[in-house]
Image (cartoon, rainbow, N blue to C red; front, side):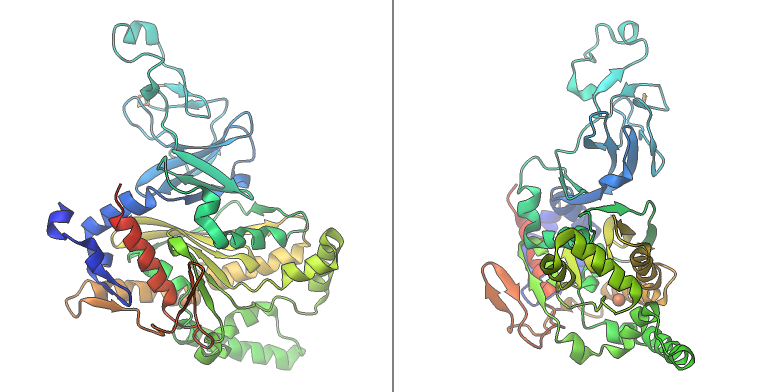
Length: 441
Ligand code: FES
Ligand SMILES: [Fe+2]
């Protein structure tokens, strides 16, 4: 039907601008779920969310309610959260332990942790002579077509075909390497709850904002300025500036000109890396102790490589935004054309001293949580953007900034020197969007 109304969906996207309907048309949203989110690799969760057999947590891929569950052999399965009998959701909680097996609360059908049917009460008397027999695969809970794990981060794809996870991630896998390598044990553990924020705007508006280096010194200026004032008072009193205040005051001291010194590296499938060193190596005793522990684990040379990784942010299209130097990520779960859930998670570096975790926690609370003004600043923009795009005040969204100055090489696009605030990441995302949306099935 949409094809009749919009015979050429690709016309929504030009290299430097996008039609507003791509953000506001409910039929386009349905098609995005079918052709993008319910086909590509979507982050489900971290394996430490389900440490023991029977542990599960619920999640969402596109429009589908899903379960991530560990079985008795230690394997993590991803299943549709749906009972094959009359379709009831198997688990209503966000997480828990299913015990030896899943038991549907409606009519007590039971299932193993890999989704296969265990038992139907009084199956012989109730189903003899029907086509509903134990060997009918429809009796099992349906599994995600593909599940893969990279360094503990579990992804699933609902399509049987397509690139494998590592091919899909390409260079953006550095997000998980950077998170894990900062642990002396090479591993992280999830902090077992997240902030959940519902935004009244299209999911693409959130993703476009994540690597929008143009907005922080405008949108977050007032928050940064207030933190800077307090920071200066503290410095006057104590002679020191706490790192946590610096996390906020940087929004006023890092100007647009400085952001232009950053760079974005844009890859196939819409992924993007924003470079920019986050200055997490002050000379305080806690940081020095952490560096000593890392050097002991990896040697001096490797420690330097790990700590000088030049990453600010990694965007894994279409569902994940990762701030690896501070072990946090935001998972995007679209709920409707104008409604998007983000889950904001953070991780603990295994084997690292506690103050290093406290630093990540401070950033999580001060910059990424719903309690901070930074988040409120962004949410207001997202809502206003969606409202404006829903109007007839114009047809196009402009992504012209530094257009024509991108450097294309080896299948990727780099922004030129001094063009860190380029809209290249948005152009790259919409290029991937067009490829997914117009692909032959
Ligand atoms: S709906 Fe699950 S047992 Fe009936
Ligand atoms: Fe922002």
